[in-house]
Image (cartoon, rainbow, N blue to C red; front, side, top):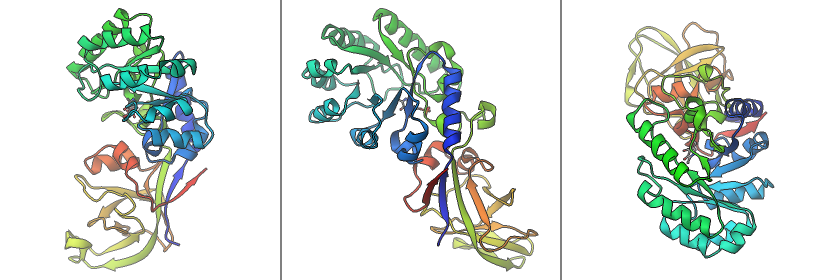
Length: 356
Ligand SMILES: Cc1ncc(COP(=O)(O)O)c(C=O)c1O
């Protein structure tokens, strides 16, 4: 059988969740499991994240998957609902809505009695400068006052545009958030994603919303998972399916972009962009075979990739780590001009999935 395998380490996931608990001991944890738990597979991840206080997803379908698996924790729809008819499912499945548009506020007000009777909170999103979702500072107080007056339990929320970096917008976002929080006191509050959990303990407030750190990848360009004391959760692996000895001057792969500078041994490995392994690159990429970091040579194809194994005793069937505990997904992403988040989320359905 072709080997291209995603293995989820549930104890690593639990370890990382415990790191959040250590870093934010007084906040409730909304584990972000949107996009199929950042590509890791919702079922296996929920089993390890069961001690989370709540889950965060991007749409109703994702919330329904969690309920169908039997989890009863609160679920926050981080973009709220997309049409009025979704309100029925919100109530039936006890889901908490973000509101970032006046029409979403109206949909909630129309179901005020049922929603508040279920004890569901409403998350009111501040647009403090990211300019993606949310009410502007000049609008939000009126929205909060309306919802409070109607008996809703409100959570003031926002998202950082640059929690991973030093940027002047951070101070503006923080100042606006604290200002609105004070103006609307008492109100629950939540603004920290993974990077912000590390950077601003004073902003943990009532709920933190870790995503990437749970999966053992870094939100920062300049801090590794080792620096952050996190454990990579996903291992993407494959196997050597062919071995070639080539002469100096011979070419490798599509476009014949790689020319052997010496006689060399190549291992052909059963992984490609059809599995979600990235083809574009900006730096030399590597895989791990027998504990050694070995270079990818030539273009990544749909189903295969070639590795320089010159001088090593590699056999057919030898396992290859594309990313995992030795070759970090963050480093593969860096070599391919992207971020770990993207590589994890965009794996295809083709790799075989396991958990341990
Ligand atoms: C609203 C919101 N909160 C929290 C997160 C988690 O962010 P991270 O994965 O950087 O921790 C996200 C992710 O995109 C988000 O959109």
